[in-house]
Image (cartoon, rainbow, N blue to C red; front, side, top):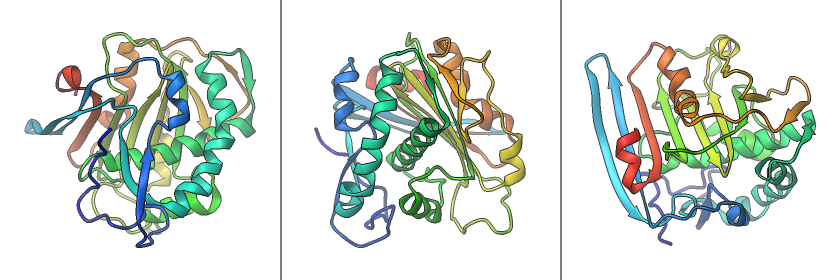
Length: 277
């Protein structure tokens, strides 16, 4: 499996910032492969920009391999093999239970671990698209130090019945007003990512405005459950999301916000990526 090239200008570990030799990292970790039944021969990265003037296609790149198995070279060996590996191990029991559809109560402690795992996956995943990094470096360092999801994030989870909607990672960005004490960051500062792991769909939103974050709610007939910040124990599995609902969730938050151009990016099997962006 050939790896994706690192975005221009990134020769440091995205979490600790050190100029060490970078290692391969998978958004869908290797241990998850037995739970990912579908395997594809090729995939595409597709992106568009949507402004008042209309839609502008930015790129459509086809590569060999399965989008769930492609690595990116972004993290140093110390980060990869120590705290990131430890977080993977802590999240594994809860994540496997979600994927296998076990009926259980997901306690707030489990929600916190899953939320940290999703945060890590999204932080890595947004580097798969050139110019789409919306999370400040200070937040990536914060995750490394605390192994906890961040106060500038909200995260939801639900079960998903995959039909014709082929996206495995959908990532959208905007530039919006930020709090005065927000970390300095060049480029988009607000992101929404929809990330599918087998039959489980995660949706993560982050921004640099506490007022905006407080106002954001993603409601889908109780089919999408908030796991960060945790509100209360939740019953799993949720009622399954349809492909129409999944597609709407992927863009609903950023579509509703006014600001700079919305940039939408998707990672999907090559045959359908250009049709679903």
